[in-house]
Image (cartoon, rainbow, N blue to C red; front, top):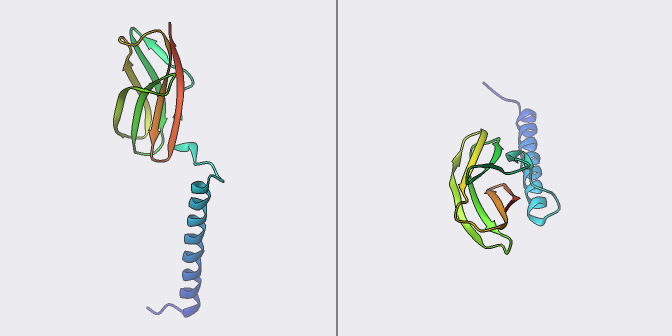
Length: 123
């Protein structure tokens, strides 16, 4: 089967333009001119308490490795709650807070294309 030169050239131009567009979008993200796509993870609005455990709900849209840590108000990492691959769907992450004193703490969720945190208070 013979493909005409004009169709080959059109496909080549399309592939090159698409590649340039993707690289340009990546460059904007690296330079901080564009926010990363936030659809990889949706973090719950609040931390729930079950006994002496704090839990945060999140929705993962693509399979990815997530690190969930707890930090204190000074930015010091207190504990690493999870560091594993998560499948798409709703996830409930629980952390044992029985050894923590009164104060403000932060759940920090880190993924290759996402980084966010939510605070909670222990009274």
